[in-house]
Image 1 (cartoon, one colour):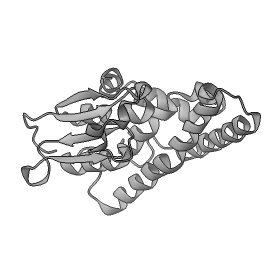
Image 2 (spheres, rainbow, N blue to C red):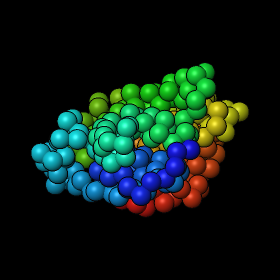
Image 3 (cartoon, one colour):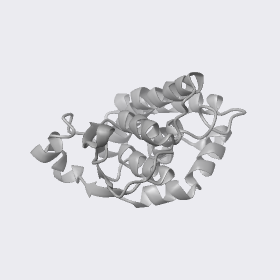
Image 4 (cartoon, rainbow, N blue to C red):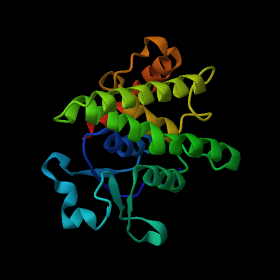
Length: 211
């Protein structure tokens, strides 16, 4: 693990599944950080200062003042940030190529499918002013399918890709809201076991409470 410096990493984020990922990772790795709230309910993600570090106007984004070569670096997209912090610290992101490929597979499964599909489920079930049965049914069905994939993956495994890793962090922040997604974990014993275990980690608790 890299030495901890006195320069805290600025974490521009909000209290959402994607927004929780980075404080959890920083807590796990023991890196100093400072939360810079971006209130997405008030549209602060479209402010010019935020767009300068996150051109897609999405949280989270970070500014590491002790970046490569000792120079600051700004990074957006939660998966890219998790990989960067894993490489920077040697924490929760294996150096062995086969092990890293396994982590990357499940990290990208989350950022490309599990998160976006569950996000659409949240939107149409909870936030959409017009409740559209077709959309709700479609995304609830996809949410249940993805949870089935997750449960099968965790059958006989403690974590998604060998040891606890950034793939678990990326996935747990969405899975903790399974109730809002219309998913009952009673038929998903492996997900239930895994989720209880990862949510009990002290660093996960601190990261979730940081925003």
